[in-house]
Length: 115
Length: 508
Image (cartoon, chains in turn yellow, red):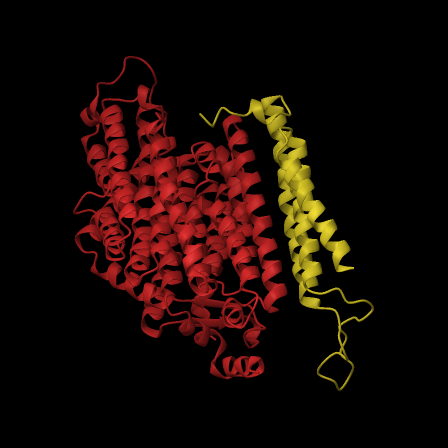
């Protein structure tokens, strides 16, 4: 299972970088979406994939029985998803406004501040 | 439990929340801007004094024991950075009284301003690597909104580059955190430092170190990933530029100092060699980029890049004197660079342009401003007896001690080229005659005294650091000693019992 996840994550990173390198600002944002999802999946995978073992502690115990899933990694991903959602919402509005002001979906038209 | 540490985060958060409540009253928001940052200055000084007296201050959130709790840690480096945040925040808040129009206030300038300060201070004080990511994002979101406040075309274009590269950096940072968590099973920086010592796969540790280097390198605007900075920093209002110039890249530099002294000090020969080359190339490209520019704030933006190189050079040389020099340099740079941006705003107010070609005659009409420009400009170039001289002197002296002759040569050359850029601004904006009929003064909002006061105060601080640098030198010395002794940090955060139990568990 880990190998499948590794391939998926690697593919997501590659696709994200490819999209970021395109000139279209819409594809740029799609690249950012893929990138944040790739990072989330990576955290999910490195924390260990455990099936059907929720980290529940029974009354009177101090530890969950046997090997259980790592709840901390899931908390991290949840936080990262929320943050990612917020900044991506901002990025979408930004490219919308930039499209209105510049009138083109092309990074090559946005070089006024570079020179 | 020490609540003093949380105050530099809570004060701006509270001021920001109150600014939101008084959304309609611009007078209250302005007053909150000055009062909030004034109070921030007071609590920051208090934090610095307590940290000076006690070494490390540690606060465990929710009173859970570390490493399970998120901890706030204040060592000398963090306390100095928090104080510098307030030292930039207060003058910028005063400057905003006449530098930010009612239209921009209506878009929510003040709440965002406070939120940015809270994010910056949170990043300085946290002792948890994932929490550091969260504070970075708090700071970034506030900076995104401040950057596009007003919505002009140049701002949109600059913001796309700024947002994209900073989100890319955040994603890499998150990736590195994930890998580090997979390797050590903890997020507490002190605990990570402790457990990485026991990890056998040092190759993977180096890979993670480089991921952190790239992520923080983008945020610090280090070579070769600095392009977002000169493309965006000259586009927003001057008060926002000054705030960004003083604080944002320095958070990236702070993060580099933190992780490359505390966590990744296993393979210094490899990682700090890369840092050295990055530092030299950053210095050179920044200063050469500035030489080609003729817009006041763009020249200053490129100089931020070049100065970042000196700070990273201090870290890369990795001797007590070099780290001391790096910390001293950060302090000097934040004061000087924010002031130069504020001066560029005042010249815009007086002459109606940021283009050096359209400026002129300022020495004749405003000799006082010319003197005030000379102080930070010559300090940036490193002329004695100003603060920049001692900052450069310490770093170059450290370079000579480890016989890094090439680095010393580059550092001296870049100082000379910085002087060239500053003299260019002086000649064009202050010395030459006013070109005929190009631009008119911009009508100011309210009294210009609110623009003069912060500039005078920051120039006086530059002079003070130059003429009486002993206190800052001693603080930087203590900070460097703490940074080079990560065991002290680990012990202060985790306690001896926990360290003993970890070492016991890993012993064969």
